Image (cartoon, rainbow, N blue to C red; front, side, top):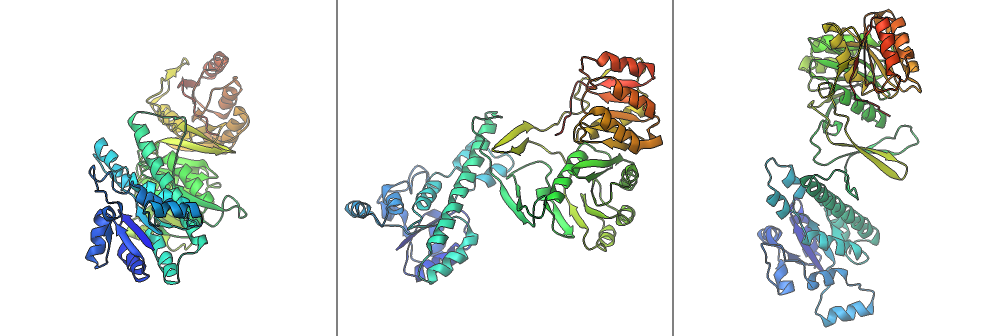
Amino acid sequence: MRALLSVSDKTGIVELATVLHEAGIELISTGGTEAALQQAGLPVKNISEVTSFPEMLDGRVKTLHPLVHGGLLGRRDLDTHVAQMKDHHIEPIDYVVVNLYPFKETIAKENTTYEEAIENIDIGGPSMLRSAAKNHASVTVVVDPSDYTLVAEEVRGGGTSFETRQRLATKAFRHTAAYDALIADYLGRQIGETFPEQLTVTYEKVQDLRYGENPHQQAAFYKTPLYDGMTLANATQLHGKELSYNNIQDTNAALEALSELTEPAAVVVKHMNPCGVAVGRTISQAFERAHAADPVSIFGGIVALNREVDLETADALRNIFLEIIIAPSFSEAALDRLKEKKNLRLLTLDMGQMTGMRLTAVAGGLLVQDGDDMTLDDASCQIVTDRRPTAAEWEDLKLAWRVVKHVKSNAIVVAKDETTIGIGAGQMNRVGAAKIAFEQAGERATGAALGSDAFFPMADTVEAAAAAGITAIIQPGGSIRDAESIEAANRHGITMVFTSVRHFKH
């Protein structure tokens, strides 16, 4: 029996090769892997001795040869295959241990050139893996060093089982598919492709989850390789229970909203919607305001902060039942204080922007779109009423507008004094969302600003806003009945800004 070993990651390869050698399996190898085996004192044959053909073209051609692929693909159970292999002096290869040129690691480096990336596209390796995986009835293919121990144990026991070869073959095809997906994505980005005719994506498992949205649903968490934006997949958990499916969804929603804010800010999320968002001079003040925005809904919520959690903030957080607190860091004293609550999940993450395309699964398909990255500064704002916003109203309008894009449609956000004081989310009509926000805001709505994720189809929302005491409104505009809303705003002394940008979130 023979084994072909050619790996970029040398982890554990000498130990596995030793087991193969001790089982009487001849070792064949290439380049650096061959050198590592020789240094370990193992007898190894260079691939050129098998093919009688030299490695050439800077290593681009060394295993692409019938004596290699014939040895991998030939079926031992077909007499015609066996006879042809004998006629052409092709000897079977029974084990293939290969992992590929480090393409992902190469393109992850800063300042990697296009030429460097292309040179790190492996051709021979995937070809051998696919050949071996196709013929897994006879050939054991190994791509992951974590499988070396299992393979070694079965080799010591007389050889790998069909079930093991089948599982490893499946893994090999996943491995080459993911490798090709990264290459296709990289090349597509070089030529500016956004929506190709075939979208090939790959993800890497972060962890299995206890269950999904409900206990009867199975679930796992995956991450996008090389994602350069803010992602929960890169967070470090310092304390508390394992994250659940719903925890991850809610925390991601909190981070998306937090990414809008550069000043000290706190975002509280329940069921994928912000229930309290505030900024302040300190992180403690920001959280105090966010808590006061909706002290009922925060119970069991997710809190995201964009500054280090100090002891003052930790004391305020500790007095509330929360699922998760995520921040760039915790002071030592704050961490000790919060760890007193054994089930509270504490996570750290470098805060930044969420970038890239957004993918949403639907039955039998996938929706893909750009992120909703439009900011108020990018929008073409127009003051459409007789009265202009005051400086304080402008600040509240900006906060309402930044938050409303992260609230499920139909969405209304009421803000005052750098804090959201009323949020109406996910209603079937806009005035219904507004009434929920006004009810939550109560008397605080007097002199507050209102943000709407889409235009007012009629003037009823403006009339309701005036009755609640709202003095400033920001909305996209664009309704055929805009004039009615503008007239109502002028009649009630409300200033209104059109942004020409809609922020639906379904």
